[in-house]
Amino acid sequence: MSQDETLLELMKHRWTARKFKDKEVSEEDLEKILEAGRWAPSGGNKQPWELVIIKDKDIKNKVAEIYSDAMGMKNISKRYTTPSILIAVCIDKRIVDSYPENMPAEFIIYASIGAMVQNMSLMAAQLDLVISWGTQPKSAQRELQELLELPDHIDIPDILQVGYPAQERYSSDRREVEEFTHHDKIDEDKLREI
Ligand SMILES: Cc1cc2nc3c(=O)[nH]c(=O)nc-3n(C[C@H](O)[C@H](O)[C@H](O)COP(=O)(O)O)c2cc1C
Image (tube, rainbow, N blue to C red; front, side):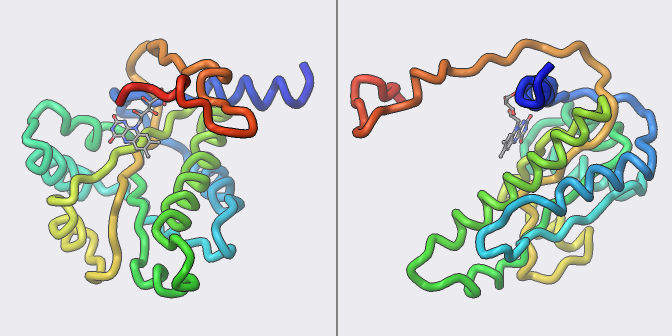
């Protein structure tokens, strides 16, 4: 297999589980995952992320409670209680001001976070682990900040679940390349009804 094929296979191997086993992720694997995240690109190389690694059962339970309440759903709390590790992805909002005024700072920050999480997710996939995104509702922010003792200027857009999947992989399809690529100019006929 060529290196390109290996990389593509790994990308396809990564997926989002929503049920996790109560099985510990080793410290060694966690370190590999974090090291992969560390090498992500970021706008201006500002590395705008702060990660809170959560292993404590009580804190996980509280995260699950806050999330379930904010979403108004009770049956989703296991997503935050059973995975071995949660990673709260935090952003110091003050970093927005460090970009030139004419630049789309929020875009740069969130795109950088995306690159970082993808790096970690690919490393997890290589280790036969799963990292799933858990976007946090705006109404959960205050309680999450209090729980993790974060100052007001730290936001938690996402809490990742890291662990061993407890469900069969489902199929998740993608648009074909030709559906979303345009040549030289946008082809309006290809744009989707949204
Ligand atoms: C920025 C971002 C936020 C996401 N937030 C959630 C989420 O809150 N809950 C969830 O179940 N999945 C979330 N996902 C996972 C997507 O639903 C998933 O990646 C998509 O359905 C494709 O499935 P796959 O990852 O298994 O290929 C998120 C993914 C991204 C990139």
